[in-house]
Image (spheres, rainbow, N blue to C red):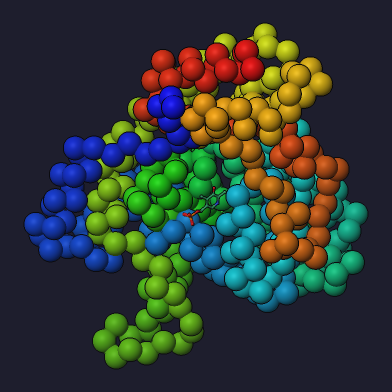
Length: 383
Ligand SMILES: *Cc1c(COP(=O)(O)O)cnc(C)c1O
């Protein structure tokens, strides 16, 4: 059996070990400590946000961000149909409802045209907010997800959100380091959430962060992620909080990872460029490319398969590649098709479903060698 080529794995090394050792040597291992503060500052400064609040997972950051932004039971939140399930789950944790918006066919992000269309055709503005006429529910927030390392069309989405008075919570879990029109994703008006899970560009083993420019939101988020303590000494709590803090050990890993972030992004971009060049003439394959206004981190490289032209469909291709120990995967099952979210509204024309049927995610680790990548490319060219 050929040596396995993983989809995307973290690279941790000497520096991570050094900083972890420092935690152990100083006894700072738990949810307070110098690395937590340093990690929050480093990440916030990197993206250009005022405040960073580290959390135990990216999903936890989303949960808290939704609550801070005022999402309540029976509210609706617009979420892309084509993404990992975490943002939709976070909406449901608050007994609110996701409205799934289809993907845009060129860059696979949430389609701003459909967001606008849904709001203007199906919703009405009232004094206390925007309401969905079919469900009678208040539409409270927009939760765009920058998927696969590529930014969403922020300008159009921000404009729609402003005009319908919706909060914006960006999920940048897969796109830490990406730029929209030259500016790094993570700053700006709403709240932005990151993940530092094992498969993300920066990993802390598990972890996340909520970023914002607003001091009141930052304070509220910090309060909610630490069990909502109203008196630091007397154990008084006015509301139900969460134990969502990141540990100093995890933050130490994150600090070490941040030192190599740019190198990792450069590496992922050159992996993507190499796939693009090698497969550009292959009939039936379309390698994902960034939009002209985008600087993608290419968290995962991916290829869209047209089975008529290519000769085999994506699932056969996946099977054949996995049989050679190349651990490719399909894109996510569109969220509205998951039984977990059955009954929620879907707005779209089937783009997410088509992409799910056709796209194959390719090995994209920063540690992928040229020889390994050649093995992947050879198979794709001569399947
Ligand atoms: C990974 C991911 C998250 C959060 O994941 P955690 O494992 O909870 O850190 C959220 N949204 C998207 C789109 C993701 O890919």
